[in-house]
Amino acid sequence: MRAGVLCLQGAFREHCEVFATLGADVVEVRTPKHLTDLDALVLPGGESSTISHLLVTSGLREPLSQAIRNGLPTLGTCAGMIVLANEVLDGRPDQEPLCAIDLTARRNAYGRQVDSFEAPLDVKDLVGESFPGVFIRAPVIERVGPGVEVLAMHDDRAVLAREGNVWVTTFHPELANDPRIHEYFLQEVAA
Amino acid sequence: MSEPRAIGTARVKRGLAEMLRGGVIMDVVTPEQAKVAEDAGATAVMALERVPSDIRRDGGVARMSDPSMIEGIQAAVTIPVMAKCRIGHFAEAQVLESLGVDYVDESEVLTPADEAHHIDKWTFTVPFVCGATNLGEALRRISEGACLIRSKGEAGTGNIVEAVRHLRSILGDIKALTVAPPEEIYRWAKELQAPVDLVAEVAERGELPVPMFCAGGIATPADASLVMQMGAQAVFVGSGIFKSEQPEVMAKAIVEAATHFADPSIIAKVSRGLGAAMPGAEIASLEVRLAERGW
Image (cartoon, rainbow over all chains, first blue to last red):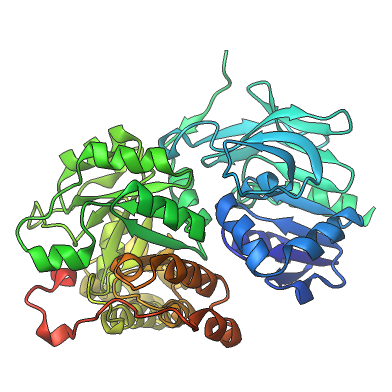
């Protein structure tokens, strides 16, 4: 299993560490050549405006978009979800999302950093106790399309969802010290 | 009825610092500069009234910025906004928290308010970043609740030499700690003037328990590449952007350099045609050493 992690900016190191503990070969993706022969890809949290900008300057935007369209299993967390969404509210005008999952995301929807929080989450099909959700200047999912499956909710909003090969979370599973969501994603990829 | 949530936890405070890794945090003094920074791909801006090189030139007491100035910058951008308070000035920090700034920098660039004590940062919901010149200073700040450490360098000089010295000191001691036998941890704690449990944690992990960024003297893309190759996880750029000849171009170049810091061909590409970097200063010529502030 070759798991790529987009390493342009943000909390990419934690994703690499979780995949490594799960036995995957981790590929740090910084330029288009790193996209070859991947079995899965993660777009990490960070600043979505910075990551969008660096996707263009690194030449990754088009080949990455194409790979996702061709079925590459992809997980976007927080800023990574904003980059993948069909529609972004309160974003920058030049922030063009990849339109890889049919949902509407609103940036920084809970407020400023003093409103960032942790909350336990019940995730569909996840065995054991609730998952520790870490929400940092998090976006919310305001609308999900008919083809999107919601796997966890908080305060009546989807916080973990998937449509086909594209998975998104509004929280940070990589900061939770709990590999179950990464494991769940990789199991589905292998299946 | 909203579901339970916990705010201001260590994980949430340190988490925002993790999100800023691999990025550039830029000093800005106006909403227009903040927009230039955001357009260039900055991960956050530091709102202040004067950049360090102007504080150095003007002299006098440097204080927290006017709240309306900070609010103007918060309204101008969507990325996190940080602001500085004086060392030990917890009332300024309370004001910044009430304004909703995303990170407070308890900074040696401003004139210290307390000659013996830093702020008890555990009592705040907003996270704090603090400067350090060596491992002991970094661990004292972490023991007071800092969630992000930046090596201090010498702000406002455009001279990277002090940042390099501080990084080598912090990272060199961390490396030495990882091979120290357990009985020596107590002597290390005594010499570093830091809590023994934090010293033991660093020895075990081989890194600080919070992210470490670099500040003070970064003026070119190659400077950013240098400190990130040494081990800094992101960079603060103060006077280096808006005191350069072409701030928009310099800002974009340093953003790319922070991402591709280990790729010399990209550093070369973004270093072309930048115009003049900020005028620098020899450390020996300085009247005030900002990095010496902090205890």
